[in-house]
Every structure is written in structure tokens, then in C-alpha cells.
Length: 345
Image (cartoon, helix red, strand yellow):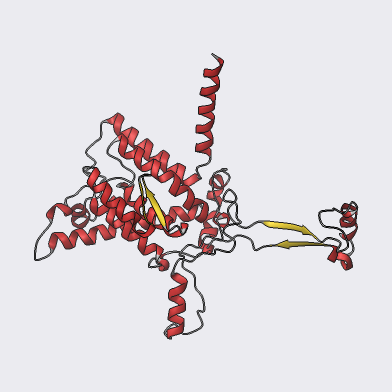
């Protein structure tokens, strides 16, 4: 009887540890999507016509709210489970790098750009003078998978890997990974929105290559939001990640104003401006950094006596440090080296 009790407790503990390790925003999205599906299941709501992404309704009746309601509704239990299980690792990684507020802004940005691209492509296909694909204008799409495809592209760009595994079966080049997933899902699953997933990939690449930099505010914008009084209840939660707590060695394409006094029309300035938009990576300190503690911390080092043998500690070191704290002319015996505070990139 005791082994069964230990096993059940172990499973519950592991589930709690797994859930507590998921950052604030990612876990909130999982809860919201799960609750919405449960409410729809209990109330028998399964048409989704009023909330889905329907290009014809958006254009004719200007129902822009569908940009955002469509991503939080799901059509089946497998649909919501698959999307949320895919969101947890990718969303958690991006949230630890960006911070909770910034990732929330990025999610709304991707939802908006995905919807606009979806509308443009559907309109061109439905109203072109050569051949009209009317079904794209009347396609009712729901689900978080469009945002997930964008996150796949962004996370792959930030990871710096050269290859990715497709369901553990075979490896493909990292740049082709989202396109392979697009084809695999389209072939293996029915009733899948090809255009919705395609627009998610296009938005992800647009963000990764800096085309959305002018839409991304600076770090002061997110710091102002985090310092607001109405945010205090969220910030106090242990899973909330501040914007300044992001990983400073993981460069994310962000908008930053540099050299505003110089002319932006010269070839050199234009090239520097374009280069600053592209995602960059710092490889020198990446390997020595512990992934459990993102960002750069402070290191404390003490100077040794050059005459002392290697590996031997000074027994009077503690006493000398206490004495030297009050005498500024002997600060050379103990030095404190600090790195820059992590900042939101």
C-alpha cells in the first residue's frame, strides 16, 4: 500500500513542479484557453461563427474583434491540448528572455499582423480578375496555432541551432523547420487552416528580420507599465518575469533609436540602421551562462597574495577585509568586479 502512496505523491509533486516552472503569461494563456474551451463544452457552443476569423465578416462589417477572439477559441479537446502543450516550452523560453509584459505585447502584435496578412492574401485570392478562390473569404478559422507558428520561427532564430527534429523522427535544417511543419500538418490533419499557419510563419520571419522594429517600443515603455500601481498585484506573483529580468545575452530584434542627430540618408548610416534591426547573437558569454538564471549577475573576487602558493587560502583574509572596509588606501587587497545590470533588449 505504501508504494502506491509514494507513487501518487511523486506524480503530483512533479506536476506541481512542472506547472510552477511555467512563467506567468504562458500559464495564463493556458488557463484562459482551457477555461474557454470548458465553458463552450458545458454550454454546447460549437458553431464559433460569431468569434472565428472570418475574412468576409471582417471586411463587410468591420468586425476587427475577430483578430483576437479567434486565437483563444478551440474546436476540440485535441485541438486545445496540442496547442497548449506546444505553447508551454516555446512561450516559457521567450517569456524568460523578453519578460511577461513584452511577450504579451508581442502576442498582440503577432495576432494583429497574422490577421492583416490573412485578410490581404484572402482578398487577393478572392477578388483577383483571373480566378477567384471564394472559399478563402468564407473560411472560419479558430485556434492559437497561428501565433505558435510565429513563435516557432522566432524561437528558432534566437536559439541559433542549425537543425531541428521533426517529432523525433528526422532532422531538418532550422530555416526549413516551420515550412516542414506546415506541410506535415496539412498532410496529416484534416480541417486545418493552411492560410492561418502560413501567415503565422510570414509574421515570424518579418519580426525576426526586423520588419516590425518600428512597432516595438523601447525598454522604457515596458518599464513604465511594470512600475504602474495597477501592475503591482501581478508583479508580486513569483512566476511574473520583469522586463529587466530578461537574458541580456540573447539579442532580440527590437526598435532602438541610435544616432538620431546624424543623417539617415547616407549609405553608411542606412547600412548601420539596417544591421541594427537584424537579430544578433553574442557567443562569447553564452556558453558559460546558467540557463536556470537568465541574465548577467555579479561576481565577487578577492585578490591573492602573489607570494602564497596556489590553492592555499589566507587564514587572515576575513580580518583584513573587515579592516580594509574602513581604509580606502588599501582597497587593492580586495576588489569587487561587477558586470552590467541586465537590461531589456
